[in-house]
Length: 276
Image (cartoon, rainbow, N blue to C red; front, side, top):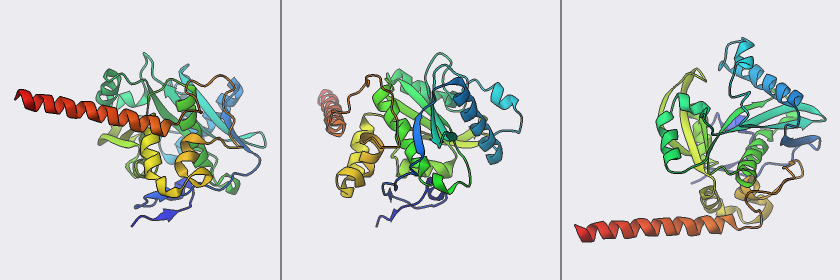
């Protein structure tokens, strides 16, 4: 039997068996999630990442880890921040693929190359950090995930997101966000610990998540709609024209695409059997 819980992400990550999650409650009215708009905001977000990563043991307490980090200073990085009454209290980024590759190329290059050969335009989720011990930031982590998922889907040409994280965190992304675990758990020098690579096809995510959370009903109580469809008063998305329209029923499109792909596979298998 599936269990349903309403807790903050960092409580979730410490739990072993979680199958579903409810739409989080409203954020504090002073919180806004949006793209970073200046070099000073990016620098403040980077410093928050640095403090959190040092505290978690990912990095040494050496400022050169911040100043020399090619991914934090990549021109292909999109930086998102959460502000509370003008203070930057959280951040997350996606790094779009380029000639420099992605952070996870350092520990899972074979899988990333496989996705590229399949024609996927990739981006990697990275640099998630939230100010600690702030009660008004409860549920903010889920809103950051909502933001980068929707930004990547509607405002970029990204086909597939990848993410590396420690194994116990990977269970959350697989169980709740429906990312797929890719390959084995292997050492990751960037995080100084073994990591699991995960990925999700951005169009198929609509099919998988809408089917998985179908019992939530429709509208604001549905976690799929929260994550990939609905905007929110606390989110500020770019004003430029979206790459993918919000008016499309992407879940229906993804189901059709999945059925057509599966049908072609069945035809190919039948052809091979006939030839044999």
